Image (cartoon, rainbow, N blue to C red; front, side, top):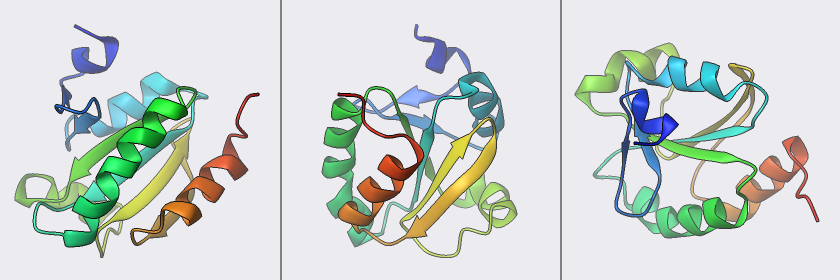
Length: 123
């Protein structure tokens, strides 16, 4: 069991950790200074499904950044409201439990630029 899974999150078949209302904040706290990219999605969102394989690939390329996802379903509705998630996909970037950036839409180039701004790639 990975440290990520010990918080109660589950890893999907492609390797991204699925968080929920109970595991979201403890996970961010555990990551401390590491940049965490959170994909807030819904099961019925077409753009969410289209960008997801690219997000998985990016998570494999940028091992210095943590990529997780939260399904904004009924179970996590309160968390989504608390974080003001209004559209899917929405991406939040966190460091030390603080949101440092966010964006909406399935724009991979914009997401990569945002990640690079907050955690430059190590060459």
